[in-house]
Image 1: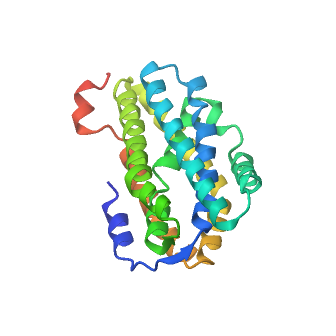
Image 2: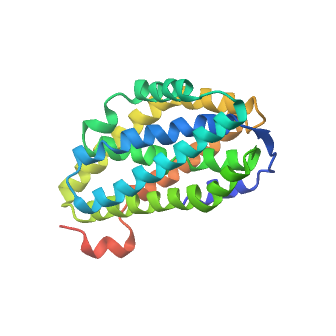
Image 3: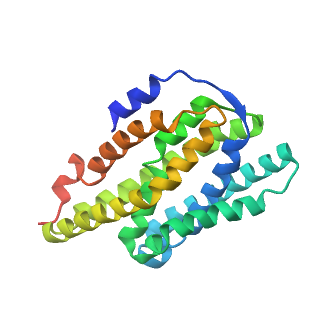
Length: 237
């Protein structure tokens, strides 16, 4: 999936600039995911998904707290006010989209669990994590946890598509394209601001990351909106 974009990421030479800035922005992201992911209990009535969603919320809450503690230990100040401000920025951007309906919620999950992979990979390749405990947590927990989240969300989504009638599937795909466009439009200014802030600390510039991010998004979206071959025989008529 998205091989061309991955090749472009891997072709970049790591910079490894020491900074705590990445952790300061990643902790609010994880806590926002906790808050928005919890909306899934309200818009999707499926115990199987609820069990998996409970795992995601627990994981991201744990990630957020470890990153918050690391920032506090290295800066000597309580980052909670900054965390609250950055979370509010994201709620102001997305408003009711994650809680409007199940497709709006899935649009949020795809935005934060699948489409943001280039940002994460490039940050890891360009920013040296100062806290060795966080570096270990990233390789042993955060990375594997996020991969698990992407896998179960994608698998549930594809099963839902495969089990839909042709008309329902067409409606779902049309609505998801609309949701995706709305998320991308709302995120554009925030994303540019975030990448430019990170570039001040030696990370990749906005001009470098934007085309990679857009290509990744396009290829992943195409994959998500199609039914995998192994499920095609189960698709409803």
